[in-house]
Length: 248
Image (tube, rainbow, N blue to C red):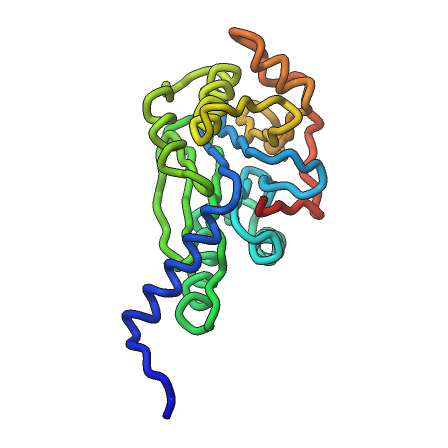
C-alpha cells in the first residue's frame, strides 16, 4: 500500500529541508552605500564566487548549493543577453530577472521531490539611492523588495540584527564595508574576518557602462583600515561569465 503524505506536510518538509541546507552555508550581506550597492561574502575561495555580474547595472549574490544556483546564474545571464539583444539594454531590469527566477524556483519547489537549497539577491543600481533595486528570492520562489540591507545564509538572523544596529543610510564605502564585516562576524564572536577571507564587489553608479567591479584583497585591507576612502580605487573591474559560488 502506497505511503500517503498530505500536500501541506509535503510542502513543510521541503521547506525545512531547504532551510537547513541554506543555513549550513556562510553568509552574504548586501547593502546600499552612498555611491551604489555593496556585496560582501564570507568566502575564502578565489575560484568559486558567491557574487557575480549579470548585466550592465545588475549583480547576483547567492548562498546554498553551488551547482544549483550556478544553473540559475547562467540562466539569468542568458535571459539578460537575449532580451538586451532583441529589445534594448535598458529593458533588462532586476525586477524582470527576479520574476524569472521566482517562476523557476516556484516551479522547482512545487513540482519536484527536492527543492533547490538556494537563496538569492538580485540588485540593480540606479541613478541615485532612491532608484536602487534589491530583490531577495527564497527557495520557494518568494520575492521580497529590500531596502538598505539584506543578509542571507548561515546565521542570517544574527547577521541581520547586527546590520540593523550598525547600518547607516548613505554611508561611504569604507564605513559600509566595516559594518558588513562586523555583521558577518556576529555569527561567531571568536572569529575575525580578514581580507583574504572575504569576497567583496560593488555596483558603482559613478562608473560608465558596466558598473560591477570586484575589490582586491589589498583594496579590502585598505578600506577596512581607513576612516574614509575613494571607492574608485584598487579593484579589478571585471565580472566574467565563469563566476560561480560555493556553499561552504
